[in-house]
Image 1 (tube, rainbow, N blue to C red):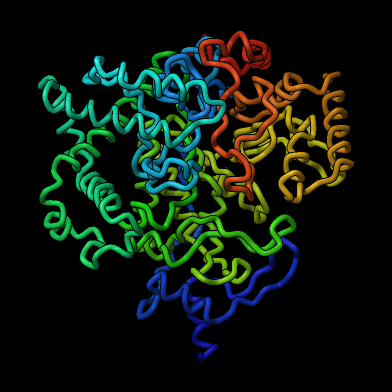
Image 2 (image 1 turned 90 degrees about the horizontal axis):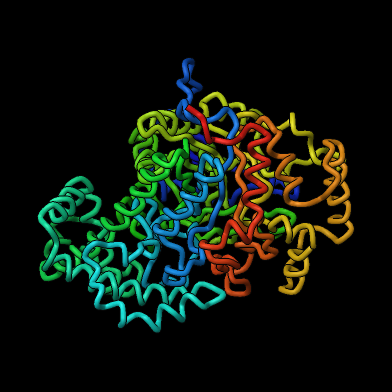
Length: 592
């Protein structure tokens, strides 16, 4: 292999031939890895168009409506985890609508949600919302089937025993929920075809027209992946790309199934849209705050439908660090910077619009990826990947433009080792930072003072990948990790010192107790624009939602809340939290 041309080409296309890992070690990327990445992005025979000079004039992203207080708060929930007397063992959009009523009563400005992207609903046990098939469509498990006008009420008896059992489960039974909902949706679709009113038929037809041609490709993919039962790159050659003529021929006898999958997406769209409309009418200035996953699975719809943008031959990951000494593979397909540059960031804009249409705020997961991604060719060790640079400022400008078009705040999850000036650049484009109290520590281990938090930021105690407050305070998370043979990343002595540091921070602000309400009061007095409180913390839950580094060893994304939604206000500290927010000037009630 001729080394110099490979290195020259890599430099030209923003592929870093050397980097430092999280252990401080300097790595030189193997030239064969550089060559495979160059091939994957389609660089051969082309000259790069540089598209990332810092703009002289920047229009910052949308910062919220006039009704949004300068500092506000919201309730964060994993929607699947909601337990209620009426849902089918998995939180749904009617639960979300009912939670909106609670948030409105409490003076919250937002409800924060996990990603609602489409997964493989027929492989529902693969439940991580951060491992989607598509970021452009919705997960049908969140549909309240009984709320569809055409749902045949007489069929309820057929589902009664199954649904009753699902409601009693301590963990979400994804396979059981998916089976019941698929059967109910099929019955409802048949009823729709026979009994729907003319206005409803017209609405469905308009939805299909508005979402064409992407919706037609999605429904084709749903039929074909079930037909072949294997990844799309193993399908017949003519169907490995979304060629419309080949699809028409292959699916000429599947019109009803195609229409069914379109119907399911229409229903999901209607119910989620109704929630955001209700949130605004109920006085939540932000309304829904949605998470946008960092990537998609290689065998999913997005990867099949836009093979210039999504690169299944590469995988997103991370180099070695203290907790992952062999590096990390995230299971997500690589992303092509060349496609973004050549299309004015069009694929990125499309992903943003898909979530912004339902939201008053979105969070871009791992926004560091807009600057560079660590990409690993398939079959290569995780520590042998390379960093690939992306058109960072062009992507931020695109996000800012889309935020104004949709009147949607943009928050960037900027955790981890952040390059110097990164957060200042985000602020310049009006993108809010994401500050987690557990990580806001000084060099001596103490928790930083409130006035050191950024104003243009969302602040919270932890995330779904971290212990809840009760779990952290009790050390439950450390015990769980050790029981699973995982390195907890800190000793009991380290945790005790952190708790002492938290106690000092609380006492400095006149808060004598180390409890969830005191921490909430501490965070409420920061200058940060938005404070999110998780339902897990409001209920004193010790188990965390997701434990990184595990798959089946821990019930990730499966835990249900300990009390039903109907009893939430009585069983949680939400009213006390709302009182703290009101005292701190974060209450949205009475805002004009």
